[in-house]
Image (cartoon, rainbow, N blue to C red):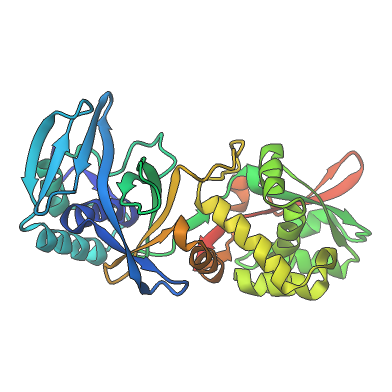
Length: 358
């Protein structure tokens, strides 16, 4: 493994940093809604990795001062001391934070990878989660593996829901008296806001029609039957420049009395949507609604501290997501939205949903 040819971005290196921190400490503090540590903490007993196909390793963290690496049949492969690992992990974090390019090599991390028989920076891409573990659970006698997503505050805000054509919301444009080719020629950094403003000034009214993806529609309706309508209203307010954050946009929808709901009811539904996305619901795949295989979220704070949202502190997790996310504008050309088009004699506009951490 060449330490200078293996490169990754800050988020990917942060996943490896989490692994080293777990190897050295095997505990993570629970977080409150403001991403501050509470008195509760979670003990991580085992980590599962399959960096090489058909060669799964179990990293046993139950013995102080050593990580026992086991084969699938339980046979001991290696036992590696963690005596100097806290200091080495800290140096890895400092190198991640100080990097000034989008992708970079990290020789300090690669050296540790070799020590602990790790072949890849990230977990297997087939996994929905970033890390699969067993945690100590006082409520359940038989522990089983659960997945945690890892989000890093180092290196900029990450996305919660990635944009794609499947996340396009389609609106019928009623009563428009202008020239739609003139609308589509509006450019600049504020083109979405300017296009919608010009549509409205020409008498146009955006009436939500449907979501491009029927799978995403069904997934949203499992959470709440009017979830597509709520998000459609928020998207219009966002692209009109009236609000950005989830708290702002829910307040706007509540003020309209959307479906007869107030701010509190709309906020609760949006929190449920954000939680579902965070724990595995994606627009491209039918959601089975099962959360038992998900442990929650591990956050790498900007100061290197790890904090954990487990399903046991679900209220704090929902509030954290709600208070720390916003809508974002992805590429209009890549995701095919933001312009007026005709279909069967009627006029339509697509707006895209992407959710990013603040």
